[in-house]
Length: 251
Image: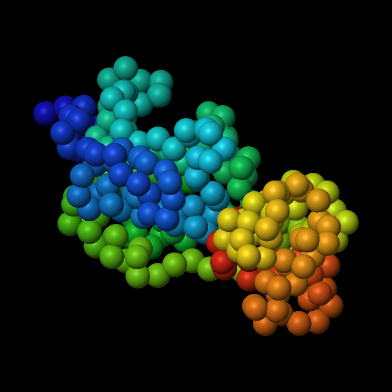
């Protein structure tokens, strides 16, 4: 039997299938059974709590099964070849990038929380001791389907809840964005609000924080119980950002 680096049957398309990551439109080909289910749940939580993986932008950069050796080797079979590895938002990280190239410290901490809940069954390439591979998640060495089933149950049982503070690198002065801004941060807010709260923002995302954005944010703040300065929709500060992130927003 041809085996991948972690010992699973490789280069056999009958043991894999293409499935949709829960909560997304993304399809990834992974190993059948609990091992693939576990990787898809990791991807779902990455999408929900860390960074959007949906392909609405037209780039297919979430990868799974691939019959190939690992990079820089002609003999060691990649875990992708057994459907026990996935890459998420792969084109955002050049080869050997550090996690910080694409993720802020809060996001990196959340990835580690997700992986930790699997009890060592899943390994993250962002924590490799050698060359980093932050796009990469794989079933670790010495694991079987029973281990994956237990890890899946543990991962589904709890979820990370990022709670940014005013000192977080997400912003530098306590304000993520505010009335009058025109930048990528506002565009991200627009894209999120129109997708998740369309009744609040019935307009095409522009990246400009104008009256329509102010009204939408004010409604969100009121529904979230946010009071005090800026709760009229003029500022997205720590309290509003925390509620947005808990609702699925990824800065």
